[in-house]
Image (cartoon, helix red, strand yellow):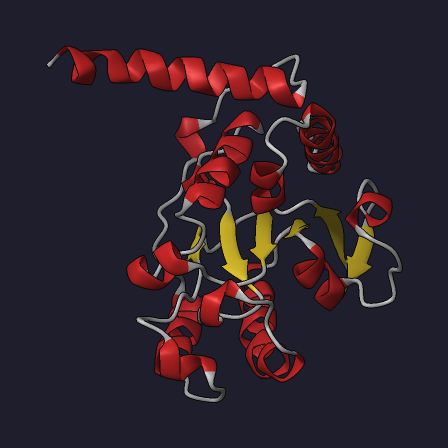
Length: 227
């Protein structure tokens, strides 16, 4: 019983440690009053049904379920990752595993509730053994993503990792360290590349990487008029 009672305190301690690690010298308070429902709008609802029925590439053969994406249909901020992992494949929701929990903390540090942003991936089905999506798989799947972006019309896109960044910024050379930290543009939308949360987990002791991600998010907040 005491373990359950201590959980809120431990969660708070863990969150505060994360804020210290990324170098956040302030924490935004989520604007609860403007939180919107996470149910899809009409356009997104149709895209979701298409994704769930899609059999265009071999990834559909091994999936438990497709992962269309989720969040506010009128989100001003959208995050795009690489593809679903094991937990996402089982639940049909994006970024719910360990990397997803870290992304949720980053979103909270920015002053947003997860329900106030939209989260999606380059491919909607899990690649075998979590490998990188192949070019053909991405080419067949990204029209769904482009349609989602057109329906949502976010003010800023954040790409998580090199695979997602390559779709939006195909002519950027170098690794994420050299690409991140500045805005690019895709169809008139500012794009901020940053490290994938799983990369932060693999380099858990490296506070410099965490700080770089937070610096990127501060630039995003400034572009949104929230810094």
